[in-house]
Length: 129
Image 1 (tube, rainbow, N blue to C red):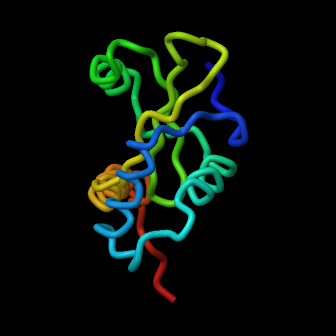
Image 2 (image 1 turned 180 degrees about the vertical axis):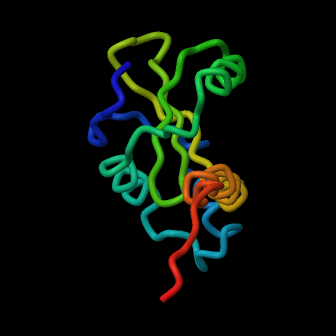
Image 3 (image 1 turned 180 degrees about the horizontal axis):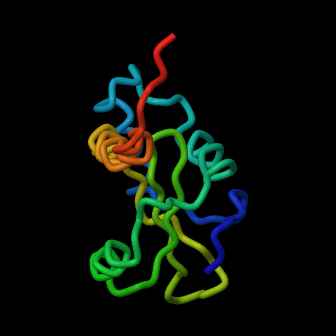
Protein backbone atom coordinates (compact mmCIF):
# COMPACT_ATOMS: atom_id res chain seq x y z
CA UNK A 1 0.00 0.00 0.00
CA UNK A 2 1.30 3.48 -0.83
CA UNK A 3 2.13 6.11 1.80
CA UNK A 4 -0.16 8.70 0.20
CA UNK A 5 -3.83 7.90 0.57
CA UNK A 6 -6.72 9.58 -1.26
CA UNK A 7 -8.84 11.09 1.50
CA UNK A 8 -11.94 11.08 -0.73
CA UNK A 9 -11.98 7.33 -1.32
CA UNK A 10 -10.87 5.99 2.07
CA UNK A 11 -13.52 4.07 4.00
CA UNK A 12 -14.00 5.40 7.54
CA UNK A 13 -15.80 3.02 9.87
CA UNK A 14 -18.39 4.20 12.41
CA UNK A 15 -16.24 2.81 15.21
CA UNK A 16 -13.32 4.96 14.03
CA UNK A 17 -15.49 8.09 14.02
CA UNK A 18 -16.78 7.36 17.55
CA UNK A 19 -13.25 6.84 18.86
CA UNK A 20 -12.06 10.04 17.16
CA UNK A 21 -14.80 12.02 18.90
CA UNK A 22 -13.99 10.42 22.27
CA UNK A 23 -10.26 11.02 21.90
CA UNK A 24 -10.80 14.62 20.76
CA UNK A 25 -12.70 15.36 23.95
CA UNK A 26 -10.15 13.45 26.09
CA UNK A 27 -7.30 15.43 24.51
CA UNK A 28 -8.89 18.66 25.69
CA UNK A 29 -10.06 20.05 22.35
CA UNK A 30 -13.32 21.08 23.98
CA UNK A 31 -16.58 19.94 22.46
CA UNK A 32 -16.72 17.12 19.94
CA UNK A 33 -16.26 18.15 16.30
CA UNK A 34 -19.54 19.04 14.58
CA UNK A 35 -18.64 16.97 11.53
CA UNK A 36 -16.08 14.39 12.68
CA UNK A 37 -15.87 12.56 9.34
CA UNK A 38 -14.97 15.81 7.58
CA UNK A 39 -12.35 16.55 10.26
CA UNK A 40 -10.82 13.11 9.79
CA UNK A 41 -10.73 13.51 6.00
CA UNK A 42 -8.94 16.85 6.40
CA UNK A 43 -6.34 15.19 8.64
CA UNK A 44 -5.85 12.43 6.06
CA UNK A 45 -5.50 14.97 3.25
CA UNK A 46 -2.36 16.55 4.70
CA UNK A 47 -1.00 13.57 6.66
CA UNK A 48 2.58 12.40 6.25
CA UNK A 49 4.10 8.94 6.78
CA UNK A 50 4.71 8.28 10.47
CA UNK A 51 8.49 7.88 10.59
CA UNK A 52 8.41 7.06 14.30
CA UNK A 53 6.94 3.67 13.46
CA UNK A 54 10.11 1.64 13.15
CA UNK A 55 9.84 -1.64 11.21
CA UNK A 56 9.98 -3.56 14.50
CA UNK A 57 7.08 -1.58 16.01
CA UNK A 58 5.10 -1.78 12.78
CA UNK A 59 5.58 -5.56 12.72
CA UNK A 60 4.29 -5.85 16.31
CA UNK A 61 1.35 -3.61 15.50
CA UNK A 62 0.60 -5.67 12.39
CA UNK A 63 -0.37 -8.52 14.69
CA UNK A 64 -2.81 -6.20 16.42
CA UNK A 65 -4.29 -5.35 13.01
CA UNK A 66 -5.35 -8.97 12.50
CA UNK A 67 -2.14 -9.69 10.62
CA UNK A 68 -2.83 -7.11 7.92
CA UNK A 69 0.08 -4.93 6.76
CA UNK A 70 -0.78 -1.35 7.58
CA UNK A 71 0.18 2.16 6.56
CA UNK A 72 0.69 4.64 9.39
CA UNK A 73 0.16 8.32 8.70
CA UNK A 74 0.61 11.18 11.14
CA UNK A 75 -0.83 14.69 11.33
CA UNK A 76 -1.13 17.19 14.19
CA UNK A 77 -0.62 14.63 16.93
CA UNK A 78 -2.99 12.08 15.35
CA UNK A 79 -1.76 8.70 14.12
CA UNK A 80 -3.98 7.02 11.52
CA UNK A 81 -3.79 3.32 10.67
CA UNK A 82 -4.92 2.14 7.22
CA UNK A 83 -5.32 -1.38 5.85
CA UNK A 84 -6.75 -2.85 2.66
CA UNK A 85 -10.30 -4.17 2.88
CA UNK A 86 -10.38 -7.97 2.99
CA UNK A 87 -13.41 -8.36 0.74
CA UNK A 88 -12.48 -5.63 -1.74
CA UNK A 89 -8.69 -5.07 -1.83
CA UNK A 90 -9.15 -1.95 -3.97
CA UNK A 91 -10.57 -0.17 -0.90
CA UNK A 92 -8.43 1.36 1.82
CA UNK A 93 -9.97 1.38 5.30
CA UNK A 94 -9.07 3.66 8.20
CA UNK A 95 -9.24 1.22 11.09
CA UNK A 96 -8.23 3.56 13.89
CA UNK A 97 -7.15 7.08 14.67
CA UNK A 98 -5.30 7.69 17.92
CA UNK A 99 -3.50 10.44 19.74
CA UNK A 100 0.27 10.21 19.96
CA UNK A 101 0.39 10.05 23.76
CA UNK A 102 4.14 9.73 23.96
CA UNK A 103 5.11 12.62 21.69
CA UNK A 104 6.71 14.66 24.48
CA UNK A 105 8.71 11.74 25.81
CA UNK A 106 9.83 10.71 22.32
CA UNK A 107 11.00 14.21 21.38
CA UNK A 108 12.75 14.55 24.74
CA UNK A 109 14.60 11.28 24.08
CA UNK A 110 15.50 12.43 20.56
CA UNK A 111 16.84 15.73 21.94
CA UNK A 112 18.86 13.86 24.56
CA UNK A 113 20.40 11.62 21.89
CA UNK A 114 21.18 14.63 19.69
CA UNK A 115 23.01 16.48 22.49
CA UNK A 116 26.34 14.83 21.76
CA UNK A 117 26.25 16.25 18.21
CA UNK A 118 26.28 19.77 19.60
CA UNK A 119 28.93 19.31 22.28
CA UNK A 120 32.32 20.86 21.56
CA UNK A 121 35.15 18.44 20.88
CA UNK A 122 37.19 17.47 23.99
CA UNK A 123 40.28 19.34 22.75
CA UNK A 124 38.29 22.47 21.86
CA UNK A 125 39.40 25.65 23.69
CA UNK A 126 37.58 28.93 23.54
CA UNK A 127 39.66 31.93 22.72
CA UNK A 128 39.77 34.62 25.34
CA UNK A 129 38.96 38.09 24.07
